[in-house]
Each structure stands twice: as C-alpha cells, then as structure tokens.
Length: 142
Image (cartoon, rainbow, N blue to C red):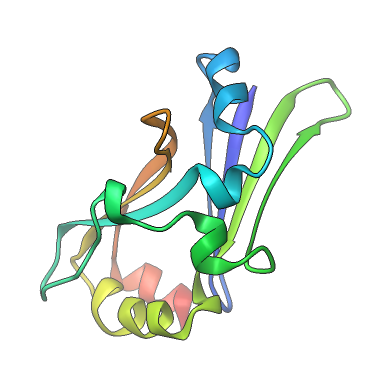
C-alpha cells in the first residue's frame, strides 16, 4: 500500500509517493473526517534565505480546516493490478496568503523545505519529502 501526495500549485504539482509500513496504523489515521480532524500539511524550512514563518505541528490547522474540502481531498484507490493506495491532494495556492508567502519567500533559489503530511493525534508521518529550490524548479513554477 502507498500514500500518493499531490501538492498542487497553479501551473505545476509536486507528487511524492510513500510506501505504507503499517496498514493498520494508516487506517487509524485515515478514518472518517480525517481531513478535518487529523491530517496536517506542514511546510518547514530547513534552510531559507529569508525568515519563513512556519507553525509547529501542534499549532498547525488541519488540512480541511485551513484549505477547506474544496481545496483538499483524501481518498483510497486500487489500481487495475491490485495495488492499494490513498491519494492526498492539497491546492496549496487556493489560499492567497500561502501563495504570496511561497512565491516571495518559500520558493527562493537555495531554500530547502520539508513537506510533511502528519496525523497529529496519532503522531505519525504519512508522507514526507525534502524540496531543494533550484533555478530549474523556479523555471517550472513560472
């Protein structure tokens, strides 16, 4: 089983796929109303040229509370060849203040950001990646 995480921007998307090591624990994290009550998207600067405000996981809002259900989704699928996966999607730029922060501070060449999908009540990371902002990436985001 896998977690496919889509972080959608206006003209581009990031996709990172994580293998599930504990399916039972995933079931606990993804129960009914997980977007409103459990799951958080955390963007954490590892290295940033300018100060980049980021909330700690306990203070961060859940994905559903922050982005709304029209700006996020979380559904389970099964491929034609039987591979099970859950698909997590967030329209990052659906919030203008986040769009502005990412375009002016977050996505600056040389910055390194961690992107984590976290189940806070369960204190589990469902998926994560580390993004290094390069000139090539900035060109793709134009």
